Image (cartoon, rainbow, N blue to C red; front, side, top):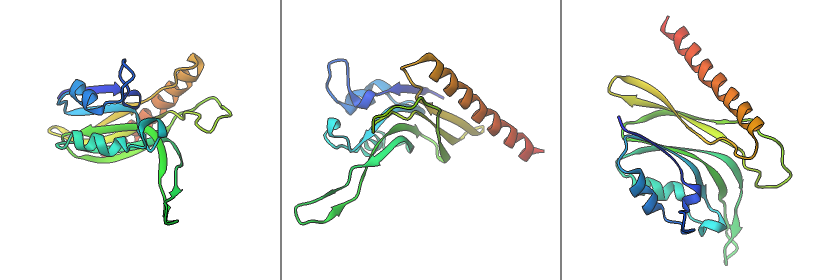
Length: 172
């Protein structure tokens, strides 16, 4: 199996252009793809739904999405009708074989006083494979402080250990 992991940074390249087609070409045709910093309904990305766009760019892949950040981005249109939507930022998994289940784990973080304090997360997916089920993660750790990352890694290791213990108990 071919795996790829890519922090797409809202789809922004080194040249500052947002171009999901270019990112999809870089990832190629991997069997399992883990993406970080996938955005939905952000004014900086022209209010695009990057989850839907990436799903279209990988039509032979199943997908799961887990936001770490989820805030209101609703608006009333010209007629006064409410358009309910969420501004989200998170991780995505794509797989050529079915993603049987997924869970989004919020990772520990240091408190910040801004609305868009980037909550980091780990999206867990159970993927059906030729040899059975496989658990994979798309993980986005904090970048601002090493102590925060260490806490996040310890939390992730606990999550993985719990999954392994549950599986062992179920098989017995």
